[in-house]
Length: 267
Image (cartoon, rainbow, N blue to C red; front, side):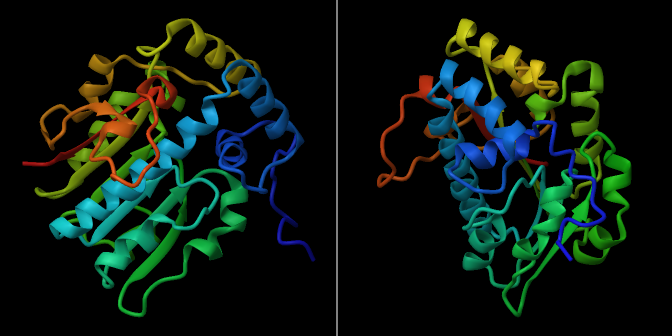
């Protein structure tokens, strides 16, 4: 029996998580994903660089927060597992760290076992949930069994909210998630922006929309709104490649990263 039996994978429809996997050089993608990703890359070959820059930001921000003492992480919009995953970074610093991954792509569910490896002291859990239903996500039994929401949690929404347009309540759902977290919690976000090249980003947006994926690039000012009420950490809201860059990372122009990143703490 295939691990995909009984799961509606919708292989004829491109999915943003599988397209992202393709950009990263992965193999968990299908013809519809590769076709849509190919159109994007033909228009904007820098998208591969942007995907890798975003992944590197996740590694750096997770490492920094684990060093600061946070030992609980909630990663929504997990995507296809690509090592090192968030839990590997966090538990490399804090072996007792607890990590919950959440995604709505059934293929991510079929690969969830790769996300559930953990240090003996820590714990990793996968929840099938959608960010557009924050109440359902937060009440999922697996999440409640793994995370203590009375203690600080790092909420990771990397490269996710540009897939939630304003008419789907992007700001409201982030506020809902933020309100459920204890003081000292962190919000970690990266987001596509047209600030770097409006015409080219507009073409990329049209390709995603033609493939059936809603997407909305946001300006820096619009991105900052997600952090309202929280204390933004240094170096502030910056291009993904400029958030505490590792000296060993290859230099990437912000124009090729095409997105902003930020980390903030709940007072």
